[in-house]
Amino acid sequence: MNRPISTRAHGMIDYTWATLAAAVPGMLADATANSMVTNYEAGVMKVMPMKAHLAMDVVMCTALLLSPLYLPRSERRYSVIPMLLGAAGLLTALMTQTESPDEYAFTPSRELSEAVADPDVSRNSEFQSYLE
Image: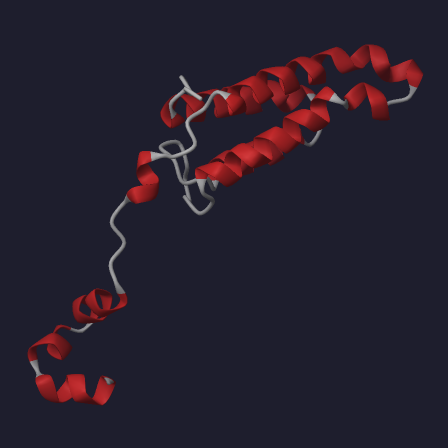
């Protein structure tokens, strides 16, 4: 399936969506935290893979789409905004690429990080024998 929305565009949509979701109590914090920890261009801490982010989007937006089912009848008229947010978020999640260019960034190996942390280890073979 061709997914026309890039991860960069998805990041911009996420933060806009989170701002709009302020109308639904509790959704702003969840959506913003989800965006901030994702490993994509708009992420701050880059811990969660893009596929997990999209899965969280699907779960969160499906819950919003189903909001009339768990609201009392007298309150269902207020579920239009959450349903619209859920539909927009679900469509965005389903149309977004599943791999971010940031997920393939260079990660040094353990040996390289030890050599960079202590340059004497890489220069002196006596030190290397103690490590092995």
